[in-house]
Length: 247
Picture 1: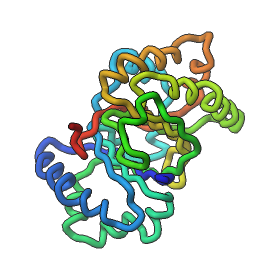
Picture 2 (picture 1 turned 180 degrees about the vertical axis):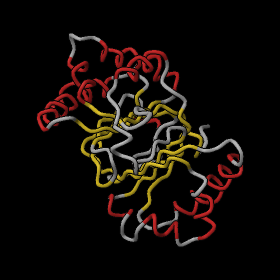
Picture 3 (picture 1 turned 90 degrees about the horizontal axis):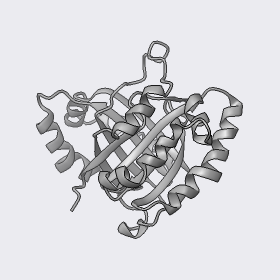
Picture 4 (picture 1 turned 180 degrees about the horizontal axis):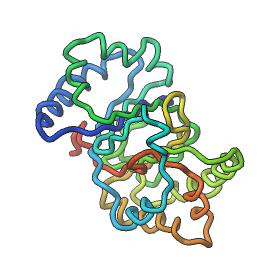
């Protein structure tokens, strides 16, 4: 089972972007897939989540970039790699393998504001569209992925209860949803993450966006969650998969 996920958020300058993406998709990611323990890789372009998500994003607390100057602030792309265990990314060290290859090192240097987290899976539910993809294979054509911390220890307990009793059961029933994974960090700024997989951005907008906008309703549990979760730049990231290509 793909219990480990390595996530890298980053930006690219317009100049040279085409060459970088061609290298990443045609050379680097196929080579990564051949490394021991790697089960899948997926590259997403972050598109934004629409008007409802913009309203939520406006009120979400954000990490203090001054206090976290070493944490990248990239928001344009999200590179995900799945493995059987998060330890696959440390034995051998994934970043060191990249740095030891001069050609790879040169291309990775084009990433701006890169922020890396390695997560392990806490819980997972399959949605009504789970048959769309093979188990332990590449995530869906569209995703929403949040990365965040909480303000207090009490918040941690409330958050765990919210996912177990409210959000995860809702996603198991939601049309257009392939699967939802609640993740916790092994390494990186964020302690928590959640990854929602959808058939398409259109399916997300039709079925999930109104549910997510309940965060703005003071009478529901979700509105409390968004007040104490401190998010990374751009979180939650909503985007479409650009590698492997979507048929």
